[in-house]
Image 1 (cartoon, rainbow, N blue to C red):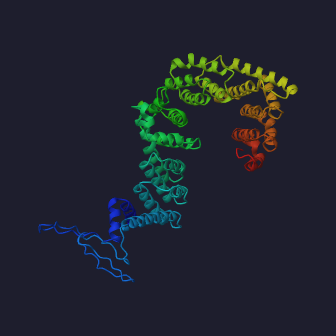
Image 2 (spheres, rainbow, N blue to C red; image 1 turned 30 degrees about the vertical axis):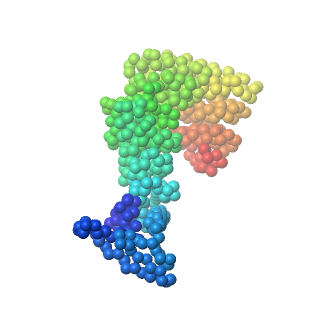
Image 3 (cartoon, one colour; image 1 turned 180 degrees about the vertical axis):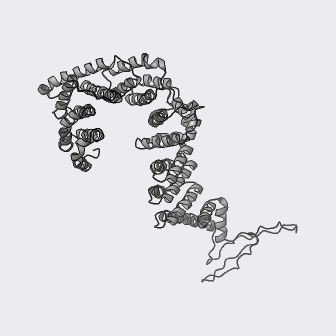
Length: 531
């Protein structure tokens, strides 16, 4: 009750009536003057009916009097009234409100949870009533409470930031505080805190975004647009997780997928910084079972990929991830499974400007589409490229002219090997290590710890790890090299990839990694923050 009364009082003091009340407390109001014709004056209000204070004399004998109209008369030389009394009162009022805000900010860090919660409620009311919103320090104090030890406080802080952002969606400070404070609570361990964060996400972003389907060209003028632009790369995985939780609960707004695709289309308003979060949301929606208007349109995604081409690798990779998800769910149409799409993907794979990430996605999509007769020729071509580079490697110690080609060949060969191992495992058997694979292993091992481009060395480690996944004998042979390079390689990318490979091998060949657990633990003290 005290918290509610305090919140109401703070909100009321920011209104014109509250300002007049504070002025009346410090200075008596004027009395109503008698009408000239002797008519009875209008009845005064209760405040007007208050009698004026009697004249008082100061220490110097000065006297302040009330004029006939009830207004303060000019003060005698020693009086205490002045024409600027109302301005002084207003200044005192603003100073008092500022001190209240500072007090509430300090109470947000009180040791008692009940006080912290009451302070958050009061500071929310203060921010909503103030025309300027909260100060940066006050917003930082509320954001800090999103990491409070008490779930009750984290929930209250999430609601506070959501209310402040809903009241001022154009404020960069409020948007930043909500993204950094409230959005991460979608992963909170306490269900009530997670629900509060999900509610704010649904109310502030997802529902307005779904409503933009009707007029996607005007979406850039909506309050949600700056919020999408402010979403950083670090916040996108949390956004995907939250959207997945809402989809599992059946709370995805209708037409959200259609709206996102409309914004990503060439005629939509989606451009610049808003495209990465939009693609991330579409990828998450593509993993869900479609329901009418919630289904992702594969044809629209294909158009986006074709438009991006090689000019925008990030955009093309985002579209390919969505296509891969749709292909694995069997959501692509029959005409696209064996026809023009696969040929187009393989053609893109052969282009010189195809990077390693795109190459991996292209191979995975082709494998998901199925079909025979395309994998083996591609595997042979990759093996020839790798072996030819290995022949030159001892003499040149540098592959500056063909590093990209060799990297792409290594990535493609590793992806094809993984698909072969998965197919053999589904059939209840294990894929054998062919002579071609043994030659690729020898070449990749030479690249891995030789004097060459660091990117090529790191890629070679990843390929060796993929080849080891289906062969315990090969894993046992290469395991000492992985463990050694994890601690001795001067290249952080090599150490990072060696750790990733060992992590995967722990799941596939657990018995082989038992005695190397200590080495894996020491990687936590690596000099590189990436490792």
